[in-house]
Image 1 (cartoon, rainbow, N blue to C red):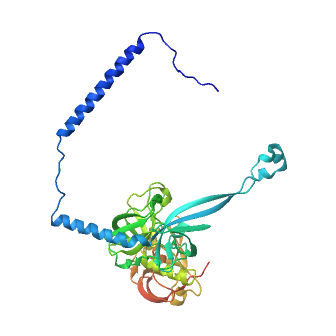
Image 2 (image 1 turned 45 degrees about the vertical axis):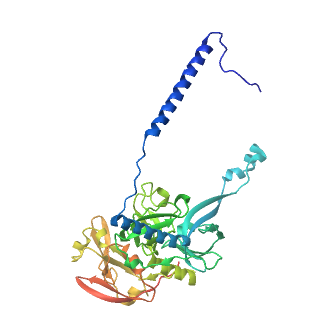
Image 3 (image 1 turned 180 degrees about the vertical axis):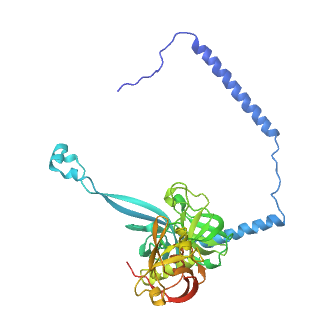
Length: 414
């Protein structure tokens, strides 16, 4: 190895003397500028005055302190969830061919290889015995689940149970008397209520954002089979999943679940644009109770298959129905609650545009007085109840409205 000490060839002219003079001149200029600048600073009097005060400012200050109380009461119950999934990556069968291996020799990698993938999310401690609620998609397919509390303690978590249909999972850590969150009542929420979202967005632990309830009862989102979301503009980002949505009383009224993102849908698609969704705590309370006591969720069941009238323009006119909203009952399953309750299924088909559509059955208009407009509405409304509950369904038979009592059964487990 050789070293080159000079990158330029030596020259025997008077250039070095001139360069020295230029450098000296530049130095004097810099020193002069520094001196003059600091003299000017000495002459500047920085504006000094007290902050704003008055009754209106005091009101804002009290509001800030109220938010601080909510945050201080809630944060200890928020946990950081980290999962690890081991994936076995299979190589091409060509690698096992003896002639192929003979050609490349023993340097070929061994197969299969195990690869580890990690995911981050949030959980909420809701029971002093160490039970934590989070989203199912946070821990789905995980081989190990680690939990970190706000005081930086690490625990190995056990998955108690999951419900993919609602996207809820319950974890348990081996600890007692941990800080817990207070469960609220999501049925009392109103659009415009102030809420705060707690979580670990992008791995930034224990972040809090504030916003409002933008809408209630969102169900046409194709996120989960059963949907009844709180919409909020409190910032939710990747990593917030499973975190708490809290009201001004410091009570959890939802579990942060998803965002609408221009990057491709769901949390994986990108960042927050002002539309986030949370599962109402009333649903969370019922799901977690079943998962802890039974290990699975007892979903209520009607036992019908239906189509929405509004999905087939012209169907109501073809059947001479007074309503163009509701669900046409196509099939009533044997021994189901609807079969026992006297609901009637389709008996014929009609041509609507390019479709042959089942017809002649009852049109389901409402359940417990709640209007049903789309197929997504039915499982959402049914899932508000428990197996064994009696509900009243309103059907259109011909052009006559009938109220029928139905006793919900537990949905068959798949």
